[in-house]
Length: 321
Ligand code: SER
Image 1 (cartoon, rainbow, N blue to C red):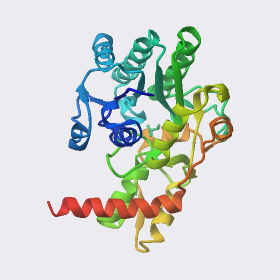
Image 2 (cartoon, rainbow, N blue to C red):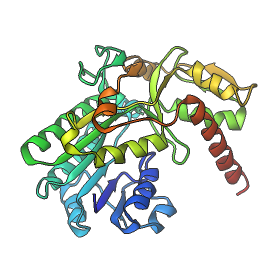
Image 3 (tube, rainbow, N blue to C red):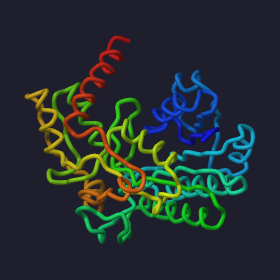
């Protein structure tokens, strides 16, 4: 990776991936792009940036040529719950961007990183220790677009030599930019509400187990996969990766270790609950561990300590503004 384009740089992952990549590859070698949501000032000042609608192939091609891009991180996605509110729009944004990324990289046989998701699995997938290679019949438009993107990645690799690699991310927990419209968002919101109100009303039920990962592990896993020796990759696109699996009661208990008075209540969102019920309880990520050495660093306990500290500091800063 010498010249990198990050599409969707203003989002939850992009806003942290851009500075992470700039530290590794040099500020001028990472171009941050955005469309509707403006970039945080830090990203604008920290290196090159462009406004672009990546569903438009010609516009994407122009930016790739202008900056001599050889690697794209495509982080554009309408997440699971939001996608169900407008499946047509979700499909168009998710798939047009994905297709254009592969198309523009085929000429130069460049590389594309595409996050897939636990959402690529469905109700007929084995829910416990979900294998790397298994039944994938998702029931959300988000999941269907993720499976299609995984298959397109394989197709462009086999047919055109595009170095398409990807990870099936679990819910990502972070403290810089909030996620939006996802089923796993509760696991981020719970920390903010714990600090603001010492209580949280959860929209998924007790006993809903889902895989999760803290942002530092998510960033490192993306770079480690893209830097992995291709000769060792059997799967390439897309790997199960996870750091932990918990239900709302477990994350509440982890918060209570530091805030004994924290209260958890429930008000179930039937759409999100149905989506969560169709996803794995816990994935088996041994293929990633074997093929390119994936190893998570944060578990629920260490992530909770860091989240409470960072979110407290962040909310105190914004209080005094
Ligand atoms: N975090 C995503 C969602 O909940 C899953 O990949 O939609």
